[in-house]
Image (cartoon, rainbow, N blue to C red):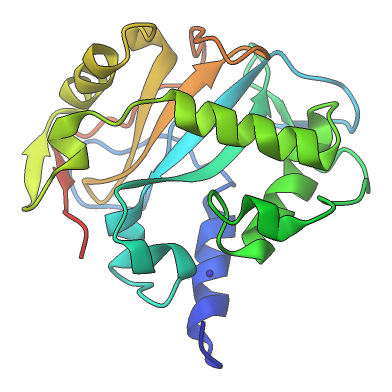
Length: 225
């Protein structure tokens, strides 16, 4: 999501499937993967949105089973999955137009080394932003760079475990502009999968409203491999 094999295709499918939300039912025991709760009907095309959800994927968890994915070569911690238009009533628009993608996709390889994922994120989410592709992707880059990764996670060298609220606290301490209401934690099978930050259209933190963190009591956090 580099070799002539099925691995990149499988990796891409997994990453794309993560854009589709499931009900947040993680109670702290192993079970189906869950993300912050966005299991609500999609809005009709072209209806606008209220705020952005910035999804920062925990790369070590994804790369455990997708080591050929382009982003896994760098042994990163958090990587950009997407910047997703959302609404305060819990709905979210998708696939709002057939507008063309960026003029030079490689210009955004720092945030999307896989151009298939870049185009998916643009077509599914970016077309609902009201921005052209280059502006939207530049906005996604700015949003990604605006969030400091806490040193306790940026420098992790061995697996650790902590409650979701503690992960939120690490992010609010590393980013004074964030409040606990603007951060949500996603997990699957009690492993960290993503941290999500709610931002207004000017990329200032806002309350996430209906989006909630996963319900696991303790989340395991593997290091980069």
